[in-house]
Amino acid sequence: MSANHETLTQAGLNLIKQAISIYDQDLRLVLANLQFQRMFDLPDALVKPGGSFEETLRVLAERGDYGELEDVDSFLAERVAQAKAFEPHYFERTRANGTTISVEGSPLQGGGWVAVYSDITELKTQEALLRSRSAGLSEELIARSEELARANRTLTATVTTLEETKHQLLASQARLNLTNSMIPAHIARVNRDGVYTYTNHKLNSIVPGRSNDIVGKHMIDALGQEVFDKIADAFAATLTGDAPVVEFEHKEAGRFNRVAFTPDIDEANQVVGAYLLSTNVTEQVRARQALAHTRRRELAAQLTSGLAHDFGNLLTIILGEQDRLSRLDGLPEGALQYIDTIKSAARRGGDLIAGLGDLDTQRAINIRLTDFDSFIKKMTLLARAAVPDRIDLIVDNHVSASHLMIDAGFAQDALLNLVLNAIDAIEEEGTVTVSVSVDAANFLRFCVEDTGPGFSQDALSNALAPFFTSKSDRAGRGLGLSTTFDFARSSGGTVRLANRDAGGAQVSILVPYLPTKPVVPGVVLLVEDNIDIRQTVRSYLQRMGHAVVETDNVAEAKTLALVGDVTFVVTDLTLAKGGIGLELAAYLRECRGDLPILIITGLPPDDPQCRAAAQAYRVLHKPFEFDALSAKMHEVTLP
Image 1 (cartoon, rainbow, N blue to C red):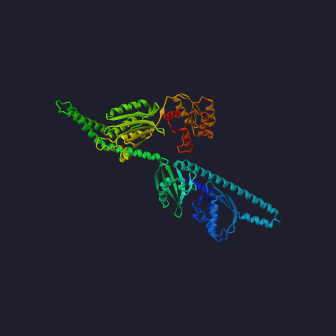
Image 2: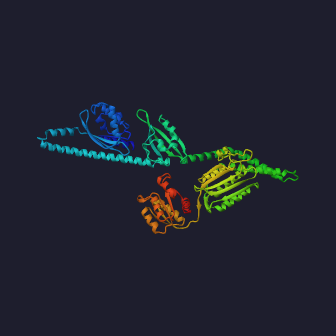
């Protein structure tokens, strides 16, 4: 609400003759009109937002508004307990100054209440007078009754106005709660004891598996011991007045979270609690890690660019002189062996310079349909050309799909780098094994193993960094595993390093497994409530060769799927007329178990509907393009 709107609201409330006050669930004043202060002659501090309900009662009790009290503290404790029950109430009482007031209180959603105080002294006086003189004043009684009736109607109108004010306040609160629930973060408040007093019911989106209903729970019970241990020190610092921000890895959920603490300070400058803003920063952390990796590469390239140029010139001279030397007549016995050694070393140096020259460029991923059998054969031929006779090369392909969506060139470079590294690691005889398979998580796994000494602990920690090499006594660029990491990261995967139990190193590249096969034209039922998205998806489907029937609601979709020649269903999760795509999918699976179903949605992956859908169906998140839809539909049709 803007400052102008707040001013208008306050001015409007001040025109109402009754006194009005609104307290929140912590019994702190939210809003009061001028009549509230005038009726009870309250100090300014108690009629400002945040004013204490208990202190207001204490001021009135000590003035004698509630008569003579033997124990003021006990009286206040009883009244505060009644107030915290937040139950509707109406009563009338006579104050110490002789006036009589009525008090009507109505609870608000989520805690707190609005109260209306009316001065009914005149009405009470008139009632007493009428009772004492009713025998002789019939005409006057009638007139007076009419006046009272008019007053009653006026009072009723005022109450109606107040009801509307209450309704608007509730609507405003509902809008605020809705806004908070739409924020992709968990907003909460805890008291000094670590007990939640407010939540926007988004905890589950930050800490998967935890309940969103946490008001009244301690932080340990709400978050779990692992997460609480990560933020306990920050919470303790907040209670001293600090505003720390803590970022931590939640290993159980496989994500990174950030929690910003803000102390809740009362008028006495005491910390009475803390506000928490929790966000999922997994993507940001991964982006920072990738950026740090890229910056290190760029810095290394800047430091070595001049050196690479000078060495390139020197190597050119060496190779030229070596060529002239090899063509001389009458060379001593064994000279050609030395010449070949010089040539081999110079060419290896040239490879190093080439690697340094390419280091500052970020290679773009180019995923396209690939004949995977041909890819394996070509990679095997290139690898065998680099393997010396003393080493055996074994290539095992356990992937059944004949065609995949992959960057074949980038994948080939990454694998050849790993094979060359494995060859260098084997000093005498040994074996290099390249195996390709699909793991349980539906990732394509390239695994290169050797029978060398394996990785040192230092190598396991730093091998993916540019220019790291363990080849202290041999030429090594330190770029092989870094190139492999670039391929995996650009493809949406990762690289894992390990040592084999039987000895030797093991490097695994994991990238998304995207098998494809020729499109078989069919009839696709498209269920989407947004007409613009429906038009876009329809064009994608028609481009694949499908005929498309479409609707925006569950009822029509059920009819079309059962009476037509539908061969595939693409449905959103949220549909027109309150329909739910997950319920439609379950119905169709029960009626037509052979019907492939793809869920498309703009909901976040942590949304309950999205998680439920992902457990039973393939899910494609918006926005997406043609290739993503085509690949996902191919996934759905796989056995």
